[in-house]
Length: 448
Image (cartoon, rainbow, N blue to C red; front, side, top):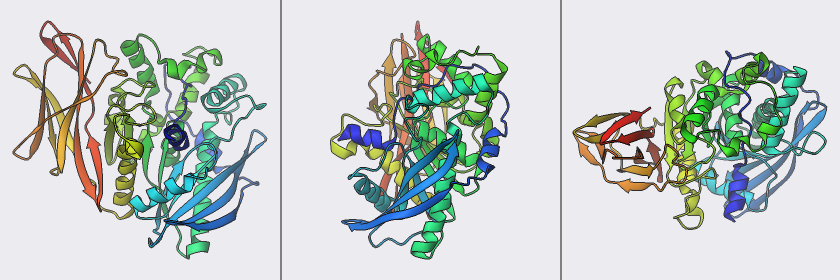
């Protein structure tokens, strides 16, 4: 069941990096692709049914024709019982097709959010290209074909983004027809490459009110790849397993630099001013543990962060039982969406790390939390992907939450702060950035 949920949420192999170590300035190719008219765009409602908890609408969508291939999607809307539609809708981007238990999950999340929501499936359509390629192998192959042909329509992230844009078109038409109340804005979310898709949609569509990308911790790709070499001694095996054999362009080739200028969300950071909640796992094998520090300060506008301790790429906390293994991520999405839909301000936190009196200290300022804690992990190297994270107590002094840990005498120590808040009965967690401390003969260096 848990593997099904993780697959349904869209967490899959993301093995597409390694082609380039330099990023050019943002280009308009994605924007031009999104503006291109789609003669095959069409949708219809296939069926509608009631079940315990609410009503499910099953829509069929043709979003576009890409490289001569028609893209088709399921688009399901979940309307909870006794909850009125709003003019803002949460849209989850995922792969595969709807399963019998998809409606249960959709209605439960919609109930927590307090508004109807939608799930867009088949992002990307697959298998494609002679029926040979899926998921990360598909992305890598389209990158290779772009580099060979110079056809700027090849990166499959382009139609992935356009499928979201067309789904928003459908949901606006659907809501007017079914509820006589049109959806005006959207909160986009998805895991891994679908989180990547949410990042890339937001800069080009004013209907996107907020985004909550999960486990795509790779913005500023040039710096990320270099950081992986320093931390792991090479690139993560997860992001290279398919990619290395399919892309042969030299890392510094102009075409390769242009590719990242089109598909790295960091290239569009000046246009990403909407509210953002970033949710990551502390033990995600795809990224360096402190990867977020390479782009966090560059993000403009309101932003929040939630690390799920002892969770990998699927955000599953194995020490918990049943569906509670995913509660941190689900409650975070629900609470963030409630804040955005109802225009209720999120808690604004600020923090700083310092070294004093032989200890490492984290000081957090913001609205008083319901509770707070420090999370700490140790490792012989900077690779914390297999480390066990443990709680440490914090203190409150003069309205500040303060956590302290001892300097490591050897190896490395990583830590971050976590605060609990609540909105409309939904309890959720916000985090600080992770800091990594290096121990050497009783001395330490705080790594950004």
